[in-house]
Each structure stands twice: as structure tokens, then as C-alpha cells.
Image (tube, rainbow, N blue to C red; front, side):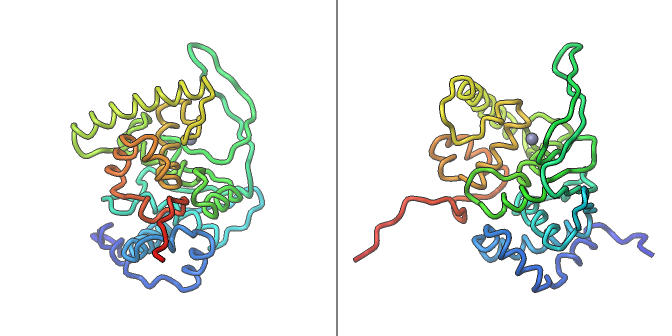
Amino acid sequence: MTFGFSKQRRRQQLKAKPFPAAWRLILIRNVPIFGRLPPPDQIDLLGHIQIFLAEKHFEACGGLELTDEIRLTIAAQACLLLLHRKTDYYPQLASILVYPSSYTAHEKRHLGANIWEEGDEHRLGHTGRRLGSLVLAWDDARRGAANPSDGRNLVLHEFAHQLDFEDYATDGAPALATKAEYQSWARVMSREFAALRSAAETGIPTVLDIYGAENPAEFFAVVTEAFFERPRALRAKHPELYAEFARFFRQDPIQYSAEPGRRTLNKG
Ligand SMILES: [Zn+2]
């Protein structure tokens, strides 16, 4: 009988469960950022992973066989976005569908006014506000974890979209605490989004993937990738953007990132 058994209590129990040693080995092997986190964050991350794995349904598609390696590699990256924040564990997301590699989606896309485009598109990942699911290509999810400082990370990207949905709008703004935070966020994001759009048009190289110039929702997802994977470069080139993301995520990835930094001189 689970009546009256609160969600919070169940989550506390999941968090307290011992983390299997074999699972920890998978994290060390597949998710190098895990080993770089400060020890208290590592413990928090393991707790979040236990809850995430218990609450989300994973489904392997396209002939892929679901393994602990797949579930853990994805869960660890998704839960990195939850550290230090009050979270309800991606409440609008029920299941994660994993394909072996990029998959073909048949879709109808609204291009404007009465214009629709229909066709097959090769995709690495996808999620939507009303879908309740998130789709990932396993080869890219694994590669994204293995290269923690190339600025590209499929899992962080797709789960950033889920955070964007938490305030019930797909607008490039996650749920923020105060009106002042929303105002500051909107001011910085609209200026930086405009700057990326003009960089995309003129071909000026930028820390941010120009895919983020597509719309504000993609911009938020692309900046999230850069924030965790290239934090030094992001802070150097876009300090206000970095500050907004550091305040929202309550993290300073420069402290643990694998991004090569300026070397300190050896004392002789
Ligand atoms: Zn996207």
C-alpha cells in the first residue's frame, strides 16, 4: 500500500540507497566530468541519478539493447543540470527513447503563415514540450560525455530544453525565482541572441554553436552546452551570459571543467 507515501520520502530513500560499485565504474569510464566534480557534488549527483533512474522510463529503439551503461551515461549528464538547485526531476518528462545512432524522423514543420514543410530529417536528439519524451542517439550521447570540453553535448542540450519547459513556455527562459531575475535574464539573453544571429550571418567565429541563432529555445540549449563544456571561453567572451547561467544553475563549471585553461607557472 503506497497511499500517503509521499514523493519526497520516496526520493529520500532512493537517494540513501547504496550506489552499486559497478555503476560507479561505468560513470568513471564514460562520464569523465563526474571524477572532476568536488566530492560533495559527486555524492549529490549519485543521489540524483538513483532518483532519475527510478522515475524515468528508458526504452531502446531501432534494435538497440538497453544496458546499465546506456542508462547511467545519460542519467549522469541529465542530472548534472540539477545539482545545487531545488528540482522536481524534469517533471514533464516520462520516458527517454534511445536509438543506436542518428535516426530518421518524419515531421511536418511550420515555417510561417500557411507554409508547412514535410519530410524526413536525420536527427541526433529531440524533445518537445507536450511530448513527455526525449529521444537520443546513443553514439552521440556517449561521445558527448567522453569529450567534456568540445562545447558539444547532446544530452545537456536536450535536457536544457526540458528545463526551458518548466515554466510552461518554450522561450529560452527556465523557471527563475524572482521578477528581477527574469528581467535581467531577458535583457542579457535578447542582446546575446541578437549578437549570435549577426555572427551567424557574417560568419564571425564564436564560442557558441550558431545553431543557437535558430530561436531563443535553441539559444538556451546551446549556451547550456557551452556553459558546462567551455566555461572559460564563455566567461571570457560573454561574461554577462556566463553570470546569468551561473546564477540559474548555481554552479561555476570553471572550477571543475576539463576545458584547458591558462597554465600556472611552475615554481622552480
Ligand atoms: Zn534543440
